[in-house]
Amino acid sequence: DAMVIQNPRYQVTQFGKPVTLSCSQTLNHNVMYWYQQKSSQAPKLLFHYYDKDFNNEADTPDNFQSRRPNTSFCFLDIRSPGLGDAAMYLCATSRAGTSGRWLYNEQFFGPGTRLTVL
Amino acid sequence: SQQGEEDPQALSIQEGENATMNCSYKTSINNLQWYRQNSGRGLVHLILIRSNEREKHSGRLRVTLDTSKKSSSLLITASRAADTASYFCASVTGGFKTIFGAGTRLFVKA
Image 1: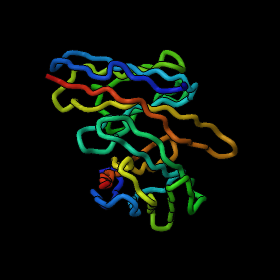
Image 2: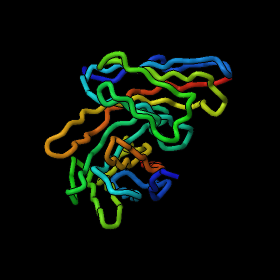
Image 3: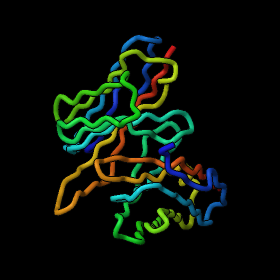
């Protein structure tokens, strides 16, 4: 089945120790997103890739970086995790394109990676 | 805060009753989407309504959109215990910007 996969599902890291979360997709979608969701809050968009074009949200801390080496994979790097970065990190994909006007379609989410910072 | 608003924050109903959730957003949108999230899991897409549409149906779901009021509503008819979850609206503007509402926690009692 076509899907969005996130690894690991649970990640524990130490304060200040870099960590990488991964996402892969078999949907062949051209857009990939990373969201941060803290407990009992709404998901918050960190950044997205449209093909190889990277777009950072204005309020995403510099501590968060992303890489998309190919269509299928996307990584979230947290360079120096703080206690406030403990959250669920959600990867999503969608297909977008233009047909006279931009068409943004539904997003397909992975199960998320729950990050704990000690 | 950039977060959209949803009400109610929480809703408890009996199985078989209808559940209505409301969402408001702040800027002009390309489309508005509704998602369901079971506790501690990823989001599942329910329905998408584009800015030039006013109403959309999918099974037991009915979504309306009023762009003049910058608001949307999700109606779940004949609710089931399995509908217990958090429901989020997400407004999508140009440039893929996606802003989620605060969510409504729905509890359906069997």
